[in-house]
Image (tube, rainbow, N blue to C red; front, side, top):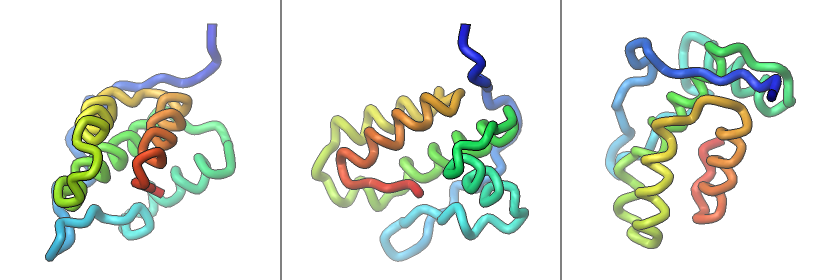
Length: 112
């Protein structure tokens, strides 16, 4: 059995479906105003133990990021993009987030 925390996102979205014009760029994690997302991301970067709430918040940010309209315009990896969008819906652990970010990097998308 793994000691890894797994979460399911049940609460209302904390990151709005707002994308920056004119290309529909995603919001940056550093721009989140409550400070919760930047704190969680810094803990994630430093491999500290994340709470279920922090994992949930990072997973929600990943969903926001990959669903940005700007990625549709690039058109280079439609199958991979569709798979990333689908898999982002079920991110529930640090390990899954790590794998998902690595998959993003394979098609030159860097959420962080």
